[in-house]
Image (cartoon, rainbow, N blue to C red):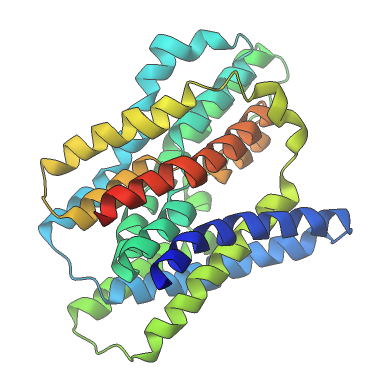
Length: 316
């Protein structure tokens, strides 16, 4: 019975807070409160979760593959975009959005929660080792690519330049979870004993963090553009849910035969479009409807098809 409750908890932790966020917007909740919730989640809950999960993790050589794996997870879809799907859209703003939603996955929140359901704190820690380096991909590749597609659309006329410095993007409070990873690994390597109450706190925090992360998503999403692009974005599904997981599974087996590590990588590779893809398209004036449509449809497909299938295979 407990196993079934853990399985369905993922659905509750994603869908219910999204609906609550939608209701809060209809009831007129000020956006400042939503931003505060995001800050509390990132600076507080996720950072503490990183410390706790990595405190029980012992560094091994095979774990080096986890942060490296973010490169194929993000970039194996780029050749597919350029060779097969770039011409599905002619407007550069559409093309830029299409590329970004293909590349970025919801690893830290959704894949992390699923890995926790399967493997507990260690599973969550494994996915965070993959998710944390994704910020470098976003800053060093996705932001410049988004600017380029915006400039192609503007034809150089009054194009809005976003000259945010790399230091300003990396040295912010939003990167505190990465510090939490280092603190947790240090505590583990120093063999600092971890109080038993920490495990109880982790169980509460991981669900609270999911709610604090998804309420703002429900608050900000505009569902009107989903229908317009849902069918046009169908190539994203085989790329994210077949091509990437199979490629990453094959690569991972070259480094380890650890089933826990393997399935955490597969979950991360199969993660649906990240909400950060929506934020990037908003920031650079690309087609936000494409990003929101991909986020909603791929998240629903992951929850109701991909996640149950992976859960079944991993639990065998």
